Image 1 (spheres, one colour):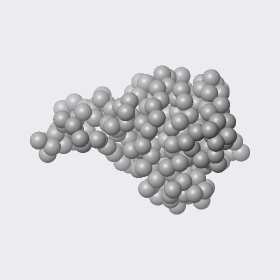
Image 2 (cartoon, rainbow, N blue to C red; image 1 turned 90 degrees about the vertical axis):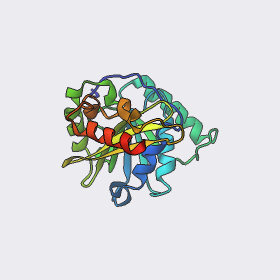
Image 3 (cartoon, rainbow, N blue to C red; image 1 turned 30 degrees about the vertical axis):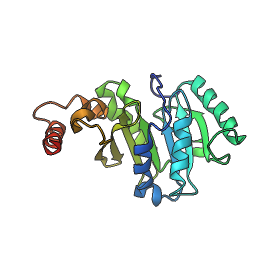
Image 4 (tube, one colour; image 1 turned 90 degrees about the horizontal axis):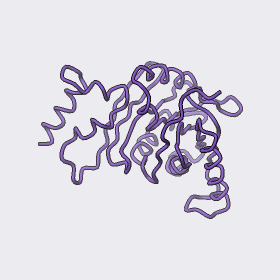
Length: 219
């Protein structure tokens, strides 16, 4: 059985463009012997997996993207969308290297392969903070050597986003990506911090110090 819980599944076209461009520059993808990338929890539409493949193959023409969802109905929807892509009836190339399957944090890969990158976006936001470490550990176990888990959150339009890069050595990076036009303060990202940090935005915590410093610099 897939590991995890069915979440809201909100999906918007072009929502994950910021994190996709970041992934395209990561050594875990660029140097991978097998550039398999998993879009875990893609939601009610397979569009984020299509967009991910289109962006990443500019860097790795041999990339493959596997979209995984815990909800069988969402897998059926994505497979139907893939038929439209293959038929040339969408803006995406008909040969886009994408497939879909049923799965959760156990990250099942047909044939037993190991992903170079797992992107799990807007998934753990709907879990308890206590669930994060276990979910990270399960996903990282499935990575190829040198692989990368990218886990984070963004707003509905993808203009406010934050994510962590997790390896077998634990969380290594925090990235904050904001649309600057109309931005009142960088701390707007507080509502979109990864689940491991969102409840730690209080005085005395390092993420709170970071956002305070960013706001000070912005002003």
